Length: 158
Figure 1 (cartoon, rainbow, N blue to C red):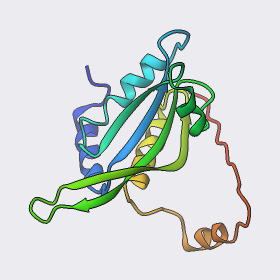
Figure 2 (cartoon, one colour):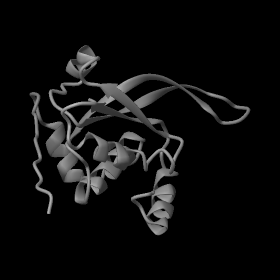
Figure 3 (cartoon, helix red, strand yellow):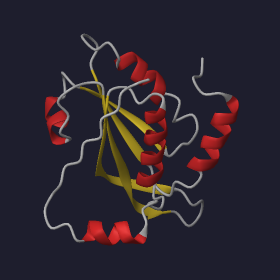
């Protein structure tokens, strides 16, 4: 059973047509001791059906601790957003060969439900080659940042 209604599915299919490269959602999960992992999996399973460029890579947090550390994941459920570099585009059929994953450093901790689902969709669009919705003034201010900055956004389900 789908969580998204048919109108929402249609709208997302249209939005995802803008993707110019494959987007990988690395879903860090574990079988035991994670109350919301199944709910997160259900939310994520909606997306690949809407675009072949959205790929869910399930990562077992317990069995693949090195991969979790590489992405800075220290709890589950978690989603790391990455995209595949395009190595080669076939002139014959327009298909693309994907290369290494590029980490966007966008993370979702917990289930991206409600308003956070919209944020997840926006992250997919951005990672897939979409334009940033930042103003030119904001882009210039960000370009002036001289040292690494970590930004955490906390939300509470309502």
